[in-house]
Length: 119
Image 1 (cartoon, rainbow, N blue to C red):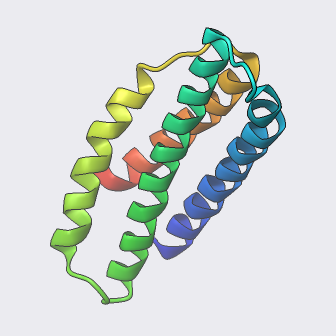
Image 2 (cartoon, rainbow, N blue to C red):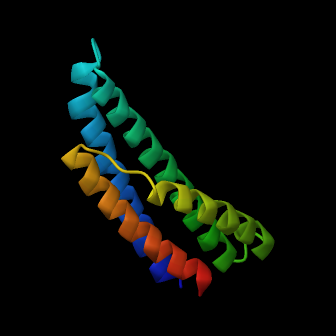
Image 3 (cartoon, rainbow, N blue to C red):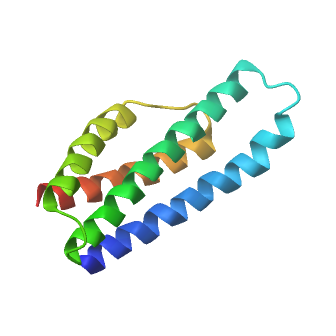
């Protein structure tokens, strides 16, 4: 189980880096006058980043539980919370192709995390 958690954590961190790079390369250059589409992109990356933070937090808690550092109840609370957030995130779409690619990768990651939670 720990190998699976570490693999998912690595994927989440890699995707967080992709999101950060997108934000740095695209958003800051448009900061002077973002059109509505630009604001939607900022919102999308913000939501993605928040979901990735929740996923990595859950994975770190799972790892701590596996090592006997925290009680199972704490992990289960986190799992319950993250499942609700995943449902909301799956309904999100974007017209921006780069963000669509990030969302697609996030969907795959969320599916793997869900499988881990359910099993």
